[in-house]
Length: 564
Length: 43
Image 1 (cartoon, one colour):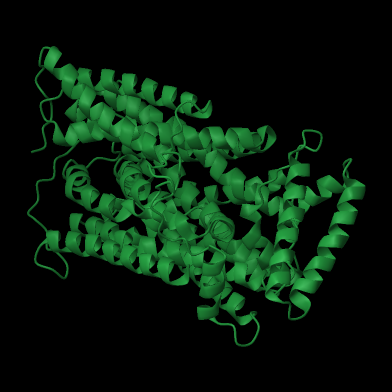
Image 2 (cartoon, rainbow over the protein chains, first blue to last red; image 1 turned 90 degrees about the horizontal axis):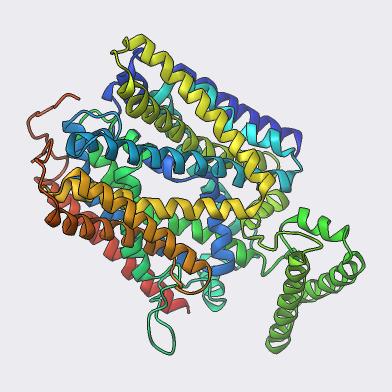
């Protein structure tokens, strides 16, 4: 990276830390530290919940996803607007009326202490691990492409934000997320403009859509039904899994995940919480569509420019030092000649078709070599496509800005999570288990310590994830999807089944969780092929139905804390 | 845990929150319709 790029990157990041520290001054108690004294306007709630959901991988991975698999990934978000409606109707009014700090406080009011502690613990476990991955995933990509040391990249990605998150709590998180989202949107818009600008004369957006369409990249809506008939339950992204599975996933995320609940509880009023959430329901799907469209633009760009045989240069270097060294040299020379012919002059349609097939063959060979156990490489380069384009083709200065966009996207998401992990630790465990009431000033100081400790834990997890490789990343992602459905089920019983008591819901949650884990194991062995989105539906509906049945057999205990 | 039983707050732009909900659901349907058209048109 050039010196001007470094200057742009460092100025942006240092500016963000200073801004967070300046804006983060608040009252020295839990209300100020975790809820920003409930003073945040609706537009900051909107940007906050968008910034919390959109991690660095969103901006790195989504364009690459569209490049390789097409735009069907947008269907993953179809359940989100519907989930926003349900959160506004059922979740937000209750949380605001009871003036809770964490969503799980409500569960003790409604059920009992053990249900609250179980749910809060599941959140801490799942979020603590997955935040480590949120730091590791973009760090691995940046360190590979730019040759940075992984430990320093992890500290860069997950450590610097701790300064303003510890100092200013939820208020610093809200203000920095606002600034971050503005920079992120601007950066992505400039990147989109630059791709179109670098296309040959006479090739515009309309032509790009035609190119994308012909190559199968505009598969925005897919039904999930197999050509021979029958629904493909293992298919990750289609209309049905997006609306139903996505609805349960997003409902669980926005209704029961403290990293999101903590954002909309900072709003000035119930109306402003609702407005922020509903506007998120309006803008999220088009926003994801545009990010994916960027991937199609990059795909069209490479139809007129030399496409790397593999986007992750580090993996190619790994091959260059393996037993495939000589073969790689021959393959690269042949590939370069092929690309030269493909983009150099007008080629007849049937010849072009032949060249494309040859090209796909070369790429498949590289992937096969990387999968060789002796090489131990990573054959998936989807996450490297967009950033490789940025570093290879964007002008000096803009590269630094785009790297800053990636880092800021990570910061926004991680800062909100650290704040929520600290709030659950102090409110659901430390304060709840203390025999005496703690002074407000002491609670405030403890909260800052917990934020710092969780920050260090997440960076350490990121380093561990890097050392253990991809298997852990996959395992943690599956872990998250396995817990979300059950947690949502507990909340749905709390809201909609007033006669069901704590014992029934607790036992149901444990049984259904065991069932979901079993399904995952069977899925991995190919016995029950099921996409992870369906775990959310099974978990939530399972807890609802089983607790209902158990309640019939149990002596009905008086239900606590009804919120009718 | 305090309980804040304040009066119903004013709905921005519309008379009722349900109109907002219909807007969000309707916009999703519109997006799906447009995406379906794009998928078919450019395939």
